[in-house]
Image 1 (cartoon, one colour):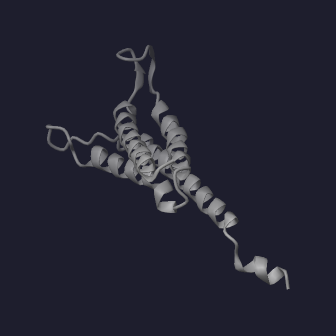
Image 2: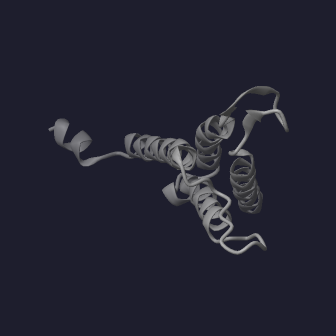
Image 3: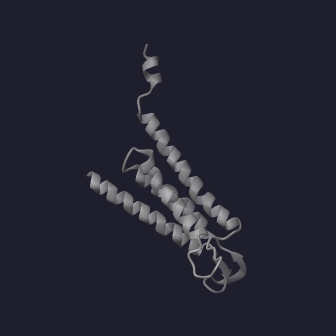
Length: 143
């Protein structure tokens, strides 16, 4: 694969990470209240936390296949996190003091679900790169 195709695919992964962050923020307040989901006791249905926990490491692993650099693998995670911060906390709406990211356990679990699993995936990329690189101990053990 050529270098320009890899850059294009990496940009697509970053755009996908940003779109996922926006959608996860918008659909995080889902409740079983009868408006969008059926009326089943009005309790929260934070399925977007699961979506974040599954898609963020998947994007990181796809980015890691494009290059051996750790920054390349971590770029979708960084874009996801920055998009979540901007959309969630910097009041993009017209209403004063409108914050889109919920200020309760669901917002915290959204960060944990996406950022922690994405960081574990970046750590796996770093471990794979270290295992593939010849180290000092391989030459010391042969003497």
